[in-house]
Amino acid sequence: MIEIHHEVAGFRARLDRARASGARVGLVPTMGALHDGHLSLVAEAKARARFVAATIFVNPTQFGPGEDLARYPRDLDRDVALLARVGCDAVLAPPVEQIYPPGERTRVSVGELGDTLCGPHRPGHFEGVATVVTKLFAIAGEHTAVFGRKDYQQLAIIRRLAIDLLLPVTVVGAPTVRDPDGLAMSSRNAYLSPEDRCRALSLSAGLRAAHALFVAGERRASALREAAAGPVRRAATSVDYVDVAEPDTLRVHDDDAVVGARALIAIAARVGATRLIDNVVAGEEGSP
Ligand code: AMP
Image (cartoon, rainbow, N blue to C red; front, side):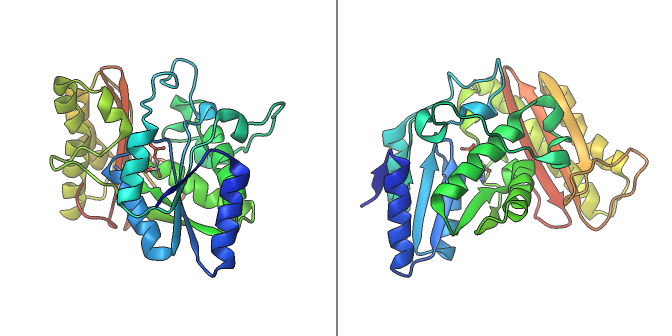
């Protein structure tokens, strides 16, 4: 039976007990509205840890003004049923005051990993992410945390913060789960009309085109970028960026650069009112 916790103290005590009984703890932080991408993270955690917990918390500090905090999809009963089905042992679904106590002031700043790609388009977003993830890591104690590569920049920032803040957490990245037609699963896909969903396929189509060029030997950043951007420019309502970047530092390559053995190709675009992101690391992963 999955245990549901709404209070940090009880959840923390439960994970302490699991560790005391000799179990490794796995943690899967989410904002709920779960799909198969999230459930794949639970499976990955179960492969690495005997006691697996998920968190469901729509973190207000990572939403900018005018973003979708108020209308973000929420359905706790459905989410808990899905987590139970894949063998998750416990879930923390706390009210906001449990995570941001009255009078709270502290934020975790992320440095230059937050300055590229999505950073300039979502001021404060990664500081909000880093702050909530640090809190969740502090609650969970020593554990293995699993995050999706779909949010590649977020994963890079979280890997860095676990090292920099000396947290007893092993951070694991798991592959992006896609619908059969290539669309990266996302809770925000629920906002897409059928027509928008078709247009949203341009992101994975662009990544596939760029990836195919890379596999064929193309190493000019400009050519990879143009291959990825073409379908997105034609179909998206607006494009935040299509960038080719160095996968570890996230530094964006200039158009005259030649990429190395691996290249991060990342896209953020709006389809209708919905902001979507997707990426592939060419030289490391299969085609999107
Ligand atoms: P979210 O609920 O959107 O904050 O995402 C929670 C976790 O699920 C993050 O680590 C995401 O990277 C991961 N995630 C979201 N979508 C996918 C996907 N399609 N495949 C794999 N992981 C995902």
